Amino acid sequence: MAYLLPEALKMAQNPMLAGIIRDIVTTDELAALIPFEPVAGTSIKFAREGTLPSTLFIPDSGATTEESSGLDDVVEVQFRRIVGNVDSDLLAEEVGVTGGPSRNRLAGKKAKATWRLVKDKLINGGHTTSHNYGLQPVIAGIPLAEGTGAADGIVYGPHLDSARRGPGSLKYTHAGTLWQFRAPGDVDYGPAVAVAADSTVTLTSWNPSFYIDITVDVSDITADDEVLIYFASSNDEFEGLNEMIPAAQTVPVVGVNGDAYSIAMLDELISLQKVRDGRAFIMNSKQIENHYGALRALGGIHPEHVAIPGYAGQVPTYRGIPILHNDNITNYTVGSGTVSRIYLGSLNPDEGLVLAAATGGSVISPDADPRTRPVLGFRIENIGPLEAKDAVRTRVKWYGAPVLKSNLAFAVREGVVE
Image 1 (cartoon, rainbow, N blue to C red):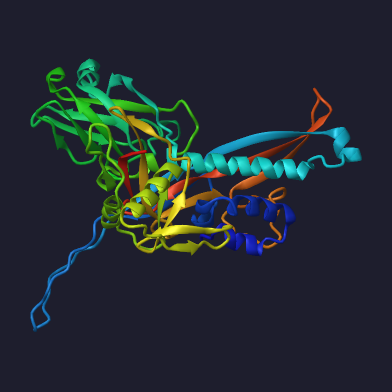
Image 2: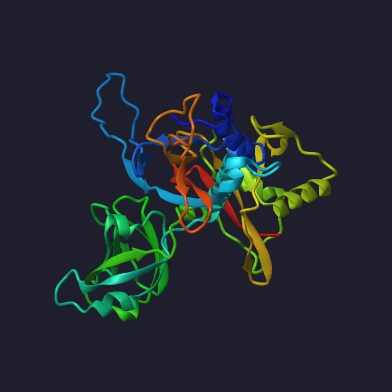
């Protein structure tokens, strides 16, 4: 059962929990709408809809031989940990300091900072940052250099975790110049892709939710080869939207220096994004300014606004869809232009974006206290007095990861000039 932070705030009777949620939700539009899903364990595993079954018209006799069943892709997303410490002066704790921050207040601020990091990485997070090949090829007697030399570059898809799921592998069949990929932990290779000329292609694993984009130099390989591939990371982040949204749900930049904002971009995203329940646009401040400017250019049209439960204020809408402000959407460069992205996605707990939180799998109870049990992925621990200084330490932790339940739930427009 997934639930929203405003719903949790209504239930919360513990003052510390209520204070943390109130600080987060009343200042963050996304926090008021994104569902939290409690999970027991160190990862979340779910079925993502794959291939639908077929069906057909039949004659009046009622005779039919049609039989088919749909296929689901089972996706497992590993949880990541955020941990921060805060020290309180013991003298202030024992005798009290007028106007000074209490230990609970300091822990609450730390929890709020933790949420800001979650929100940042919800957009920008990416776990896999490098790869290397096994010291020996899987097929004996074939030089490893054949396989590595032909793969000039790899762009990583989401959830390629060799540290927890072991190595993947890359396979080349010279007859037909066919390339295949098996992701870490997956059962088999995905479909073979013929690469007859130097190009960049997408290779999916047996489970198509795992994939890589590989740039191939065809002249560098002349015989069959199969090598192990290990994915590594220079960070401990979870994958964010920039990693999870597939290429088919991405509207690429057209102009050499980016594309000027237009209302038509929002219409394009509406057509591309297929999960209709709980939809919202997500933009940074500059793109929201561009949106208002485009409306003024149409003749001073003032957008409708909608109130979000729990959030202190109203947000603009376009075609009835809320526009959420998020300045964690960073800018980047296309040619000489400074650009950023615009997202449209579903926050429906069954098919859209959710935050899976390691909470023992239980639904929040009214008296839930993060100092005594996991709540919404948060844990607050009393580490105790420190040896090196006259202070007591509190540790604030969050365990979890964002999950995209459907590959059609989000769409993104790249390269919008700021």
